[in-house]
Length: 499
Image 1 (cartoon, one colour):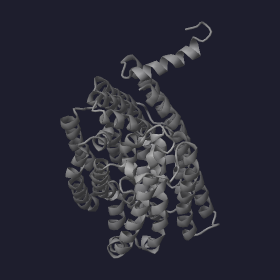
Image 2 (cartoon, helix red, strand yellow):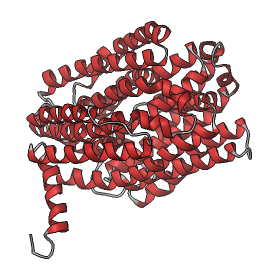
Image 3 (cartoon, helix red, strand yellow):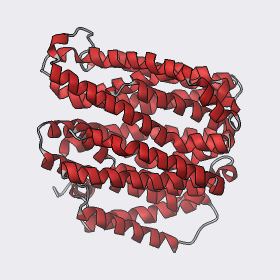
Image 4 (cartoon, one colour):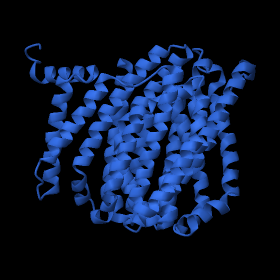
C-alpha cells in the first residue's frame, strides 16, 4: 500500500490544483458569464462526445491494463504493444463516427423539442470523439507505466486552464456561441497532442510489431474481452449520462445547466479516487493474473476504506456548507433549486468511490463477462426511474433516480465480487467512519448560522474538520492516516527534541 499511497499523493496534489481551477471556473466564472442554457448546451455536447469516445476505444483502456503484463518483456518495444493500442481506437473512431452519423435522426429527435440548440452543433461532436478517445487511451498507457502525475497535470490543470480562457473570451464577447463550443472542443485536441508528445518519454511509442507474438489463445482472449467491454460500455456510457440527457430532453437545456452546476458540486467527492484507482488498478491486474485473490481482497479493502474516508469527509463538508455555497456564487438563487440534487448525487458518488474498485476487480478477472448480465438491466431501471421521477420532481427526481440506480448497481456488483472473487470491502474501519460522519453532522446541526456566508462557512468547516480529525485519530480508523498525523505532529512539535 506504500507505493499506492505515494503515487496517489503525487497525483492528488496535481488533481487538487486542477480542481481548484475548476472550482473557481465553474462556481464564479461559468455561473457569472454563461446562462444556464449555455451551460446545458456545452455539457450535452461534451457528454455526447465522451459517450461515443468511450465506445470508440473498443475497450482499449481496460485492455491496456489487463493485457500489458502479457506483452511486457523488459524491452523498450514490449512486443509491439503500443501499435495495438493505437490501431484499435483508430478502427473504433471510424466505426462509431459512422454510427453517430447514421443515428443523427433519432438522436436529434430526442433533443429537438426541448434542447434544439444541441442539434445545431451535431457535427461538431465528431472531432471531440477522436480527441477524447486517444486522450484517454494515452493516459491509461501512462498509468501502466506507473506515471500518473504528468497526464493528470495535462487533464486536470492544462485542460481546465485553457477551458477557463475560452469561458472568459466568451464572457467578454471576444467570441460567440460557436467560439465557445468550438474552443472547448479544441482544448481536448491540444490535450491529446500533448499526450502524444509525452508518451515517447516514458515508454515505447514505436509502431513496430510482431504479429506472431500474439498466440491464438491470447488473441481469442483479447477479442472476447474487448467485445464484452464494448457491449458493457454501451450500457454503462448511457447509464452515467442518462440523468443529464433526460433532463435536457424533458425539461430543456436551462434545467440541464442548473443540474450541471449541482452535479459539479457533488462530483468534487470523487476527485481523490481518480489518483488512487489509477495507481491501484495495475496492481489488481497483476494479483488476479497470478490468481492471488487474498492480495486482491486486501487491496480492495484498503482502497475502499481510503475512498470512503476522503470522499465522506468531502461530502460532509459540502453538505454542511451547501446554503453558504449557493449564497456566494453569482446568480446563486437561480442554481439553489439544485440543492437536493447535490445531496442525492453526492450519495451516489460516495457509494461509487467506495465500491467502485470492485468493478476493477471484475474487469481484470476471468469473470469480467458477468458485468454484462446486469449492465443493461440497470440501464433500463435508470431510464424507467428517470422517466417517472423527472416529471414529478424535476431535476431532483433525476438525482433521486441516479442514486437509486447507483445503489442497486453496486449491490449487484458487490454480490458478484463476493461470490466469484471472494472479496469484500467491509472492515471495522468503515463502520467507525460512518459513525463519525453522523456525529459530526449532528454537532453541525446545533451550530448557529451567521449572516455572513463566508464567515459561517469557515467556522463550520473548522469545527467539523477538527472534530473529524480527532475522532479519526483516536478511533484508529486508518493506520495510514494515523501514521501521517503522527509524522506531521512530530515535525511540527517534536523536531527539535527528536520526537
